[in-house]
Image (tube, rainbow, N blue to C red; front, side, top):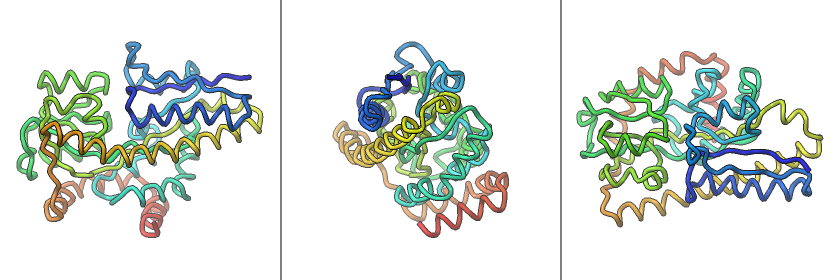
Length: 308
């Protein structure tokens, strides 16, 4: 029996943590006990930064992890396809892209550029903007310090809206919000609730500007050492966990929305006209991101999106 060490960074109620638990159970079942998964649910609780998962997995301290695709887009520019704000309209179409030819292509690009293999794509949540003061329009964004992911494409887009982007590790995000080091931040509702962001940020603008993608990453050398039957069983286990995790994510949006409203947080739906204004204001920066991809890759994305 071989043990795979798998790391996460979120708390007990997280859809990722719950997905990881499904994965651990499925690994044992799909491999007939030849493999087991030791899931360290939150390395942050042990003093690490969340982003340490990437170096720990690529370096072999861990065998696998989940993590936002945006953090790898500098090394694998093709992952930036999912950093096109206000482009992918809904979950259904995003899943179709990830589970089709585009997802296969991205796996190849990650394998070529890094020491990882991508075994699955998890739902990292529809992202919205939270703030200490109400945001109703683009004018309200001007001069606000906004916490973003450590991704240059994201920062350019939010700068175009008038924000002052600040890259802060998720470990330090709750304190940055609580101490007013930032005026706003963008995250899925599940993170806003579970990290306690809503205690300070009492306003949420439901922009749905991105559907985040969390890659299920494994150390490539570790996978190469598995028996073919073990490798196939691990992939089946990840596929099972992916279906469950995506279901958790969709259900959690409704649950979190109800809980936030019950606690007096103002959730504001963005009108179609205002959404169009946000999309137009950021279009030039999204086009900069698109220009970094080959024509063939852009066409693959656009054609798959149209067919979804």
